[in-house]
Image 1 (tube, rainbow, N blue to C red):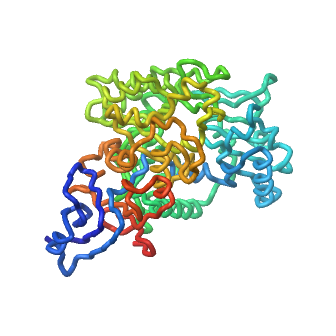
Image 2: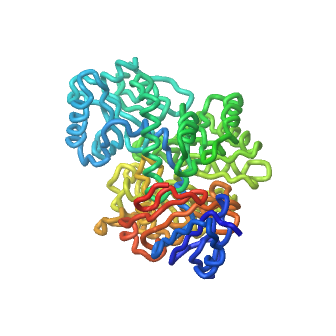
Image 3: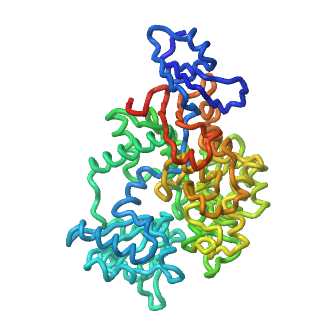
Length: 539
């Protein structure tokens, strides 16, 4: 046997259920050819074989983020980051500095704004209108589903009052019909976004390349991309033409309300295409918005009487769309945050002829659900995709945050039920939802175990009974990530015949204390047996 590569490590977690210790993996033609001991590896080696000894590092299947937005995130992260702002004074200071850098004619852009800085007051452009010297501004809130435009930006976009949409989007207006600046959901944000100056293709490609390189160095070998916006295909092709994508990207274009079968056919036609490391394999739908902005779909209204409707004005049309894609063997991934939204997605999947069947359908986010919905996931075989840092970064144990205050104690106590889903036998893929939260997987795996932010031992955990074990957290990025994509037959474990995608850890993720894991490093990443990152060497 002639092998392209042999990897050696003191600890290798195969995640295939085997109990025999493994310290060596052989790779041939991008696939795992053999696993065994260091003694076994000596017999595999030939003069042509490259051998990399990782020493005390721990090797696992390659980490895969189950929910990211690389290209869309380029837009969502334009301008200054506001996630560290603690109050409106901080926000104004950051925006003034951004305005100075933009010049007298430039747009002021920002992202990551936490609505908690407004306290109990409504999000309103009055907070920023007077500090930017008349420059137009578009500030995206942290949830990615809302933005704040100032008066100048609204004027340039021609937004003077309420607007009708084919989906549950809104230009929020006061009692006199004057826009407050708050734009809810993508269709409303697009009214202003379309008049922004556009980034050059070369700059955009360079930014995406740098971002994907950062993903790789953080330990990621793959990502489930929950969008396929304008220009995405061209960017992925261009990067592969220039060299190589450093990780595998599995894309899911959006299917939005109002288009009907004609639009569904156009979305379906995007699937089953791709390159060496990118592919379009699924469809992303939204059944609701976010709790923080009152656009989730709840069985009972939130504290402000909001979050009572589906993102699809006709929920039956959503169900018909799911049937359309499922009949063609196309997996669906639906953004569903509220209990009514999650219930409707499960209803739609249960109504499929013969049920969900062999095609893996999944629900994204799942922020608050009652007990009976947890059991329905298991019974229907629907996968869950969740982001632990949405809980640990944006909610508080004492329920004083905006998300918890809107829901009330009962529903906030049924938040991010990761452990209950796992204990019920549900496939649970984990991820970041970058740029909504940081993408580094080690801190996310730590937060999943701690139910608080890693590195902050004084912070009270949110729902500590929902903490995952170290193994469950690792599985969420490996074996369960593969199952959530319908790829368990080719990925997700270190098994002969599967893809040779690996992540090498400085510390053992199954033994390290979560806070220590979060602060540790990644030794290397390998995709298809090719080095993508290895300490001071980039392959």
